[in-house]
Amino acid sequence: MHEMRKKERRLQDEETRALLRNGEYGVLATIGQDGQPYGVPMSYAFAEDHIWLHSAQAGHKVANLAHCDRVSFCVVGKTEPLPAAFGMRYRSAMVFGAVRLCSGEEKMIGLMHLVRRYAPDFMEQGRRYAESALHKTNVYCLDIECMSGKTNRY
Image (cartoon, rainbow, N blue to C red; front, side, top):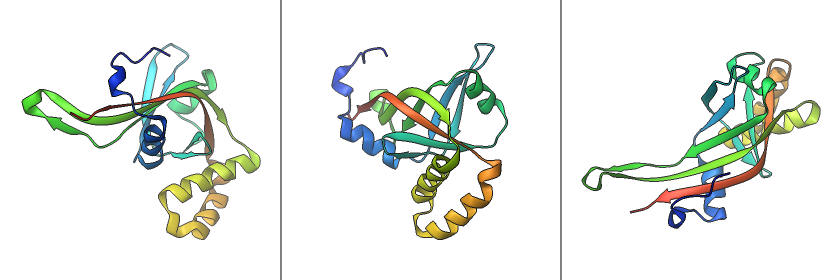
């Protein structure tokens, strides 16, 4: 991974983790067999120091992940344009690592992390929904190798 050019903008590790825990969505960047990059916005859960993702069992993203498990994942927090300064107030987190397709108990664990993240008041209904969707859903776990956060607070 490249060194951050403006080191004074680096977020502390706990700030980066908080952004990952609380972000609304992230963008998963993959690479295709033809070398073409592909970024797709996704809902996710950050738990157990992993990024948990789910998807259909076919499609562009699934084909890319079957070709190459190396990915990046970016979450952008609240932003605010600063027109008079020709700048932007922002927070972002970048994660790099390898994605693996989950199966068995780990697949259900990943889905339950997503239920807990997006529907915490509906855990039992979420468990039933996840159980009924297991056969038609892919669950991926991004094993984080490195992450960094950046901010421009102005």
